[in-house]
Image (cartoon, rainbow, N blue to C red; front, side):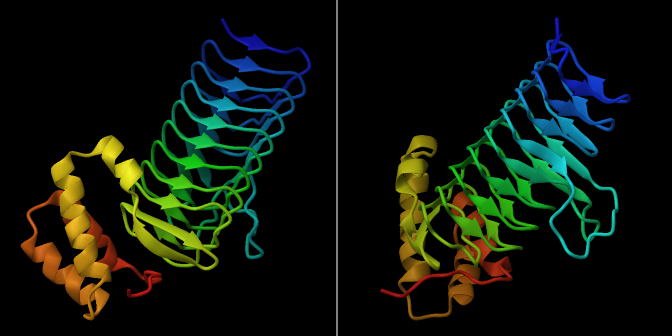
Length: 259
């Protein structure tokens, strides 16, 4: 059975699933769909053409589905899709997309988005991601599965971050970070592999293969993309290939220093 506070505002047209909870002074817009088990806490707002997946929590005073913060925005209608079992904490803002590319802002499943984070228009987030407090994503940012973004970290528009990446707190990121890496600093640079995260999820053989590939890629005098192309065609490890493919296709460049 759903619980809707008599002090909540539910606009006509909103679709409310089963076992949904909406707290006092929360606002649910006319184009919103709250799927089964969603909880929207006191004072939160869910607006625009927004779908919230099953068992997701939107905590107090978060604003989800508001218009994009883009000076070229002219009132176009895009869609925000939020997956299942996400936790969106207090004062988080997640914006609708512009219509410049795919017309969607997408949040995957099982993500933990801590207080005061901002996810701008057209961002694409995978699954099992953690954004610590005050992490801020500009427009068109893409983040892969199992990545952790430290608190107080801004990420420049159009940056891509691969899966299983760790970005240290209070970093400032303006270039792409390949899968499986650890980066930190202002401006952030790659410091090594995210070994703690990798050892939790991958077989030792995969971690060893990535360690060997990392040395070849980032401690050689050859051009990075040249080495990545060679490794991509010679390695038989899928994760190494994934790492190399990301480097080959980067458009913003990879921030690192030779040692």
